[in-house]
Length: 271
Ligand SMILES: [Zn+2]
Image (cartoon, rainbow, N blue to C red):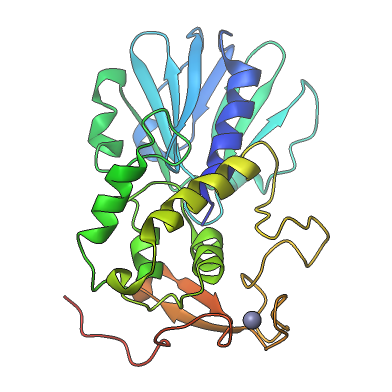
């Protein structure tokens, strides 16, 4: 699941490549949109809203995409070989005279009137990297369900938009709580929200999600992706477990020594 900063950077690169340019080719390779031809339309801007990408086109039309697990947009120069995946994984081709944007494995790709973007992103909480960022509103949304495990609450895009598995794990580590700690038991929760914003801001203009301040390979994160390896702070082996709703395939990582609070335990009943 991409983090909000990855989507923000993707939007910025797509905007730099396509913004203000007219499409000489615009193929959408999903059955519902197979007959749509976007050639001739100018790309006005490409923006991120949480983890959603919005390419606004001339004629009040927005091409909405979401990367989910392994979707990606790649940019190529004319004549350059496409390397983002097999041809059958290509979902969209947006080409100008000088650049070609290719969307691979996009699980969400749809056209909608620009005025109706809220129908697909209106449910999102304040966007950590958006112009609407509002820490008080994010905190109020999180605090509204004090029994909910903090790891799950941070991943819920209705509370605040932009956090994926990496930042959820790292934020819990940095605040010294396990992902299963009820949100109401997290000390100084306002600091969690401020820190979330700071981490995404610090990483938005570069690939990767550095939370340790150390960009060396294997040192960029405290606990994320480091199960069985020594905690970078105390040396205790980092643990991992699934959390949240099973179908979302969330994996939590934590240091049992640096982080206080409940462990994964048996799954609570649904509902
Ligand atoms: Zn530790």
